[in-house]
Image 1 (spheres, rainbow, N blue to C red):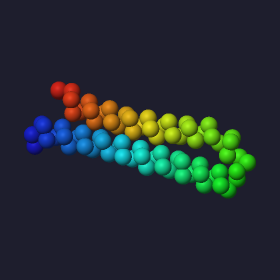
Image 2: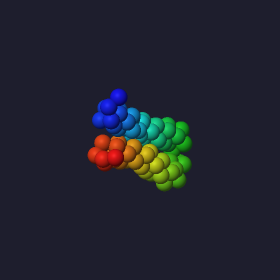
Image 3: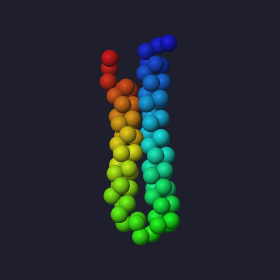
Length: 76
C-alpha cells in the first residue's frame, strides 16, 4: 500500500470520531429531555450537567477532527 493511500485511510478512520460526537450530543440532550419530562422540578438542577456532557462530547469530536487534519496535512 502506498503511503498516500494509507494516510487517507487513516484520516478517514480518525474522522469517524466526529460523526460519533454527533451521536453523543444527541444522546446527552435526549437523556436530559427524558429526565426533564419525568421530573420537571429537577430539570433546573441538572442543566449544568447537561452542558458538561455536551462540552465533553463536542471536545472528543473536535479532537477527532484535529487528528484527521494532522494525518492529512502534516508530512512525515
